[in-house]
Image (tube, rainbow, N blue to C red; front, side, top):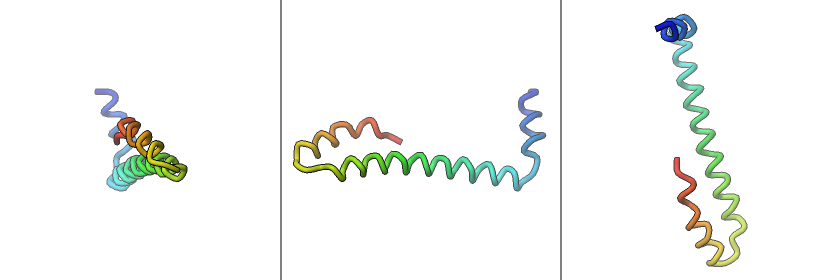
Length: 64
């Protein structure tokens, strides 16, 4: 209960709530872009089918 009251005191206006929502939304968007940049960086160095299939086999790590 004390934690909820503290949150209510800190985020007490509509503008602060919207700012916090947009902030977390942008963080999520940036996190997803980092994973895409890593994947496209690996695709840049593909030279043959074997390396392409190797990247395809490791794609299970990159889940959002």
